[in-house]
Length: 490
Image (cartoon, rainbow, N blue to C red):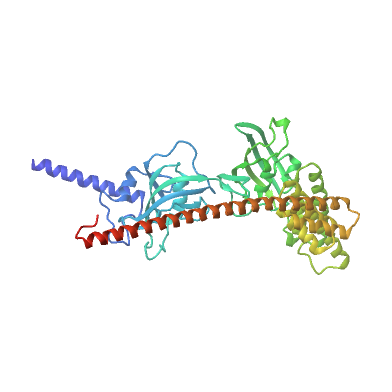
């Protein structure tokens, strides 16, 4: 019996020794810690991760190991750039908690793969599915490294996290939510194409599940329409890096809009998805690198292209061209009188055309903004005053609109369109005033009815109160008489 017990003890010790060796192989330095309370017995997190964890690092260097506690939903996983929402609890290997979103009772959100969190969390969350709960063990180089994060996290500390992935969604590239990007493969470095760059891409376009376009193509950023590439792909180029592969989800405004693309069997107002790989690009000169002659030559070309797009009803594409001219020339000062006049002419035309494009797009605040810029340069510009009046009329700012149309008539008394608009404004103002009168009349009538009802209620209450007082006085007199005759009051 004694021999069997000794043999069993030796076997247990040997198993423990092998586990410690496995830990040392998987996590070099895991038993070398600055925290004296950390131990390497069988319950150590490092041992658990060495036995059950999987390496989720891209280069398989054992920097982040993961153990799944609860399986997530089948399907998609978050991609680089996605906005993710998680709950997490971070601990040292001795079990001491240093941070938790649960304590704050609020999910933590960040953009994946953008360096907003430690590398271990970026790597670990990329491997998860929605609803999944897992444990992550991160080596120091995937956490806070040799410096740590005093006072809570010592130098060279391995960290463990319990993470629940609540939700994720793609990166929105435009203020109106029209372009959403999800990165499948991260690009190289930090250099991006700029406006005017020539880009070489491979793209696959889908409408629903149907592939309608697959090709290699090169185009100039800002002019993708010339190659049949939607505006949404063009606008995303300045966010991409060489070698990047991403999925772009385009609302109709950034796809083919209201057009019917018969060759692709795509109806109007269709959502599109493009998978785009940026193979290479040649950057254009930045605005500050261009001399005035180059800017004026480029402006002439952009003006011509903007006019073509406008006539074709592609107003957003036209906006891009006119905005390019403004960006090149609006800060040009200190040149000769003739050149300054040329610059001013380009700016006036561009901002007037921007106002007209925004009128078509029903972006009335931007119409007013661009007309104001023209009026700053030319206070009697008939077109700017008229278009500002139109925008204000569409915004139901009838008095302001009428003032603009009257200013147009001061500049050009024979402008019959402005005269007609003044009449429309006057009619709208009368309608508005009549509507206000009815609203206020009904309101005052309701107030009067309420006051009458309230008055009747007060009188009734006063009458009731008088009867009660009279009854109370009678009862009091009766009680006193009864007391005088030695009887109790009822």
